[in-house]
Length: 305
Image (cartoon, rainbow, N blue to C red; front, side):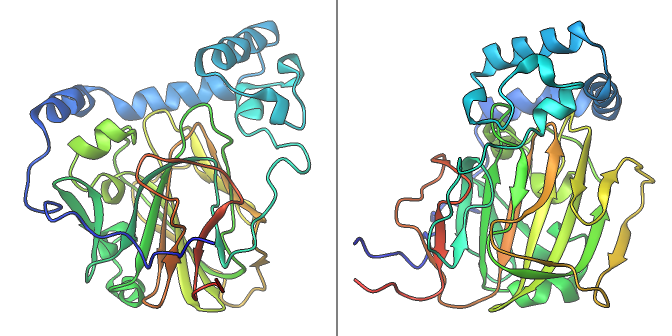
């Protein structure tokens, strides 16, 4: 059995180089486009029950992005009343077995980055990092347990399954909706927009686990109509423009490893924070590698060889 690495090294250039000119130019139109208006319009279209037009849109999407409907609990495009119903479709039973690991991958997608948090800095892309405090909405007390901890950022492309599951058992303590921009979160934008994941709209979910606190951050993006959690339902809209917070410390909202915890209505990115400790990421993980829900993400101790 291959040895598990403690976590990847930060590139020496991580905070010393500017992003490529091509990346900056590629994202320039996003600064100018009416991202919120586009997102509202996309949300209305995705939630519409338009019969044959909805079915045609779904079929076109499946063809364009190569969606594998054979994995869906319901593989018939005509059976979905709205595009959102299709986009948040459940998988058939047994489609994603859970690995025997302390932390499992919570989504289908691709690895954006992962590894150590250097003091309070999370590596975004060459030339970009951002702070844990900024990510969680400016709450330094909330961010403090993750100093010199570990992070993983996973990108969900349009073709992916868009429900988010628990990487480990957890007791929900708080949820914070942080208003922000709605830039795209694709790899090009991650390379071209400073502090992308700490400036976009996001939902911060804080849990207590067997090894201490951990955080799952659902990051919004252009045309992401809304984000939802299983304990709250739709979090956004509304979008009041100010942070909103919910306290669950006096409630028993407990989720087991592999349980669904939320979903994107039109896809985006999940950022996870874990405290300092002997976390060892899967040696097969690397930036840009595709990942699947349920595969081994990390172990808290060295597995027996």
